[in-house]
Amino acid sequence: METFSITLKNSIQEISRLAGELTKWGRSVKLSAAILNDVQLSVEEIISNIIHYGRAGAESEICLRIEKAAYSITITIEDSGIAFNPLRAPEPDVDAPLEDRKIGGLGILLVKSAMDHLDYQRAHGKNRLILVKKL
Image (cartoon, helix red, strand yellow):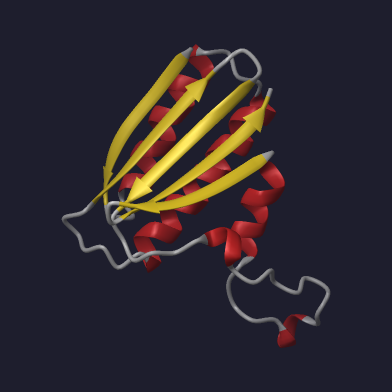
């Protein structure tokens, strides 16, 4: 199993550092461009949401761990922000006229479509989101 781990500060500037490190790792483990794109898009969307809406404070950290096995990639994202289960968030009405749509929800919808399985847990004051992508 090949693993990638990084701890990020609760700051939007960390997204570019994450993107660079994740790209290097993805290439080193020979992920296809399509799989790497799905992983990056999903991870960046979730972490961006944590930074913008998690309300954990600037000193808090976001821990990301990605494990590549023979047939899947498992992504675990942990933060100490407010409890939020993105799997229970209402789905946006993508068929509604643009002027009638509520703001938000499209990123989670994107993650759900890019990944094969998602799971959320809240334990010891932390959110833990697990994303699985089949290879």
